[in-house]
Each structure stands twice: as structure tokens, then as C-alpha cells.
Length: 279
Image 1 (spheres, rainbow, N blue to C red):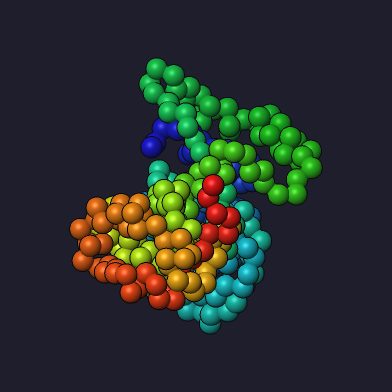
Image 2 (cartoon, rainbow, N blue to C red):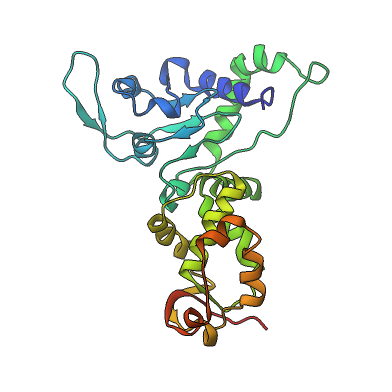
């Protein structure tokens, strides 16, 4: 949402360090050919009101955030590599989805909520139009900032909660795990069962599923604390058809994808075994 103070906060930062020391680059522009050339010599990068919903190539963005080498090219000049050590601030009214969904991506994000919604009745325009431009106010803010024993940014519960929500919205395998695994009563789940159920769940949720191979690569990382990948005979390892299979068959697509019988129940098959059995 808008009218929540994000723009005012960014203006405060720019007034504090000088607008000439700020590069205006939105997250979706980091991959553009000449965009990073404007970052050279700047102190801070601010992307105001980014509207992109999906970042297919965020490599340069995260490289700048972490201080890794990135290619830069100015018009009419030879490309070169550069390393930046700069604060990167991006404001948006919704969080984009990233193609790269690794834990490394999430470690590079600190999501700060601006929950206050200002209206004509409670908005004090003097804050943005006057107060944050005053020399004495800026000097006070600078004094406080320099007196802090800063090592890294704090991560309060609000930011941790937003990051958890972002992970779920950005990775439908994690969303599937959060939605389904608490309901399982089985101590063993065949891989084919989970793959079919995942596809059916995605159809029901209206999201595009990962390929079978991608799903099988991503799933273990999300459930490794409670489940281990192994091969077992489902009938002795604890695949509960009466509950879990019956519930899964509520999905029409699952019924078309997954076929199970007594022979398969007794044969060794790949799957996931619960590390600590349910009481």
C-alpha cells in the first residue's frame, strides 16, 4: 500500500547523505546493460516504488548487495568488473517473486514493514516538506547514527515474520510443505505419492508447479528436520493409505496421476521416513 512513510524515509536518507551521493536504480534495472555505471562513486542505491512482480535475473542485484564483482558498462566505454560496498534500499507495495529461490537469496534480504497508513486526517506534511530538510534535524539524526555500535542490521520478529511469509509466497514447494505435511499421519511417504499430490495441490491453488525433478531436488531441504530420504516397503514402514491416501484422493488430478495397489504397497520404493514416529 502507499501513504505509509516509505517515501519520506527515503527522502530523509537522501537529505542526510546528499542526493548527489544516491544512485536511483530499481531492483529490476540492475540487469540492464548500462544501469550500474551510474552507481560508481555513489554511497547509497535507492529504488523507489518498484513495480516488478517477478525478477527473472537478480544476479547483479544480489552481487551488489553482498559486495561481489559485477560487470559495469558505460555507453561508449569498455565493460569492466567492479565491487561495490553500498547500502541498497528498495521500496515496493508488494514483494516480487525471484527466480532464484535458494537460501542465499533470502539471507540477502531484510524486509522492513511500514504498517502505518496515513490519511488526510492524520498526515503531517511538515515532516516531509520541512522537518527532514532542516539542518538541525539532519545533524541530530547523523549524531544518533554515528553513536550506534553497529555491526549488522537488527532482525526483529516483524522482519523475520515477513521473510518467512515471503519464502512461502516465493516457493510453492515450501508452501505445499507448510500446507500438507502437518496433516500427514503416515511415517513413510512414497516419492511418487508426494509428487502427484504436489501437482494436484498446485492445480488447486492455481500456481505453476516445478518439474518433477525440481520438486524432488527442493523438497528434502524443506523437510530434512523431520524426514529422511530412503527406500522402504510402504506396508511395513508406515504408509497410511486409510488416511493420507484417502485424503489425497479428494483431488481429481491426484486420482489420475497416482495409482497404488497391494503389490506396490509391499515393494521397496523410494520415499521419506519420519525421523521420530508419531505417538
